[in-house]
Image (cartoon, rainbow, N blue to C red; front, side, top):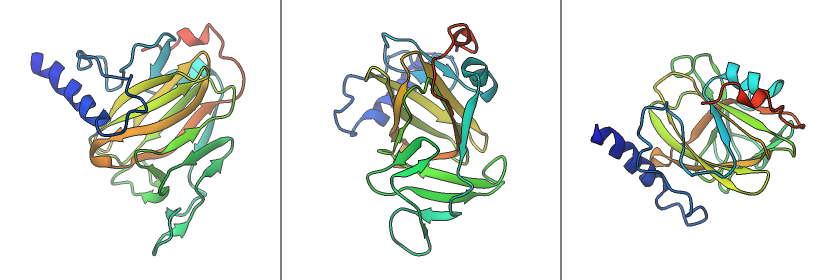
Length: 222
């Protein structure tokens, strides 16, 4: 029993190590390994962040959500020059959300062998940043083709406070990770992944501008 608690905690500590001290105040609790699902909030927030692991309960919480997919982008694209990649922008703006990375953004066609359905995916390695429009109360990521891989994200809320999220993608299954914060979401940064591999997104959903209804915030709380 003790092993199940210690190992995930060490794994999160390893993910956070060597990434600079910008979020040094965010640490993983020793009991992060308790059986509460594949996603954990690993800082003690003063403002509640609610986490969702499927599309249905997330949409019940936020109401209408805008979907961004990457089907309009090249099946093999990069913001860095190089054959055989087609050029894509960096920063890359889709609807009102801006995706950026200090080095390269990349797109790939994910086949059905790796994804639930064949589609174009956006790959963001650690350091990648997603900025959301003012008034965004919730965001949801659909992750595909990552295999078994832990990852850590840093969410900046409307008050400028940072929240840490730790998740684990599972095999060829789709992994859903969503969250709502009452003060809103400014940005999400890819903090860490196993061996600095990319976070692979098939689509991103976000709540349009406007306040979250209090009664909806009680739906799908994990």
